Length: 83
Image (cartoon, rainbow, N blue to C red; front, side, top):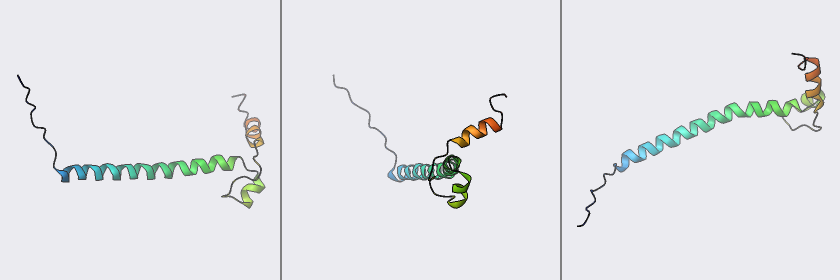
């Protein structure tokens, strides 16, 4: 006995290409939306390590001195340890 495989049906190329184009455009849209959301968050995190003078002197650059004391000062002034 020989097994006969049924012919596989393929989608027309135009339908496959349309799905691929839709998938590609969806991915581009999601990547763009991710960038729009993540860039301000990254900027906020970088700016939190700047001193006040450094922030107003060069607001878009990297911190010249990484000021970790901003977090300790915010912790104590906001009384986070109490609440």
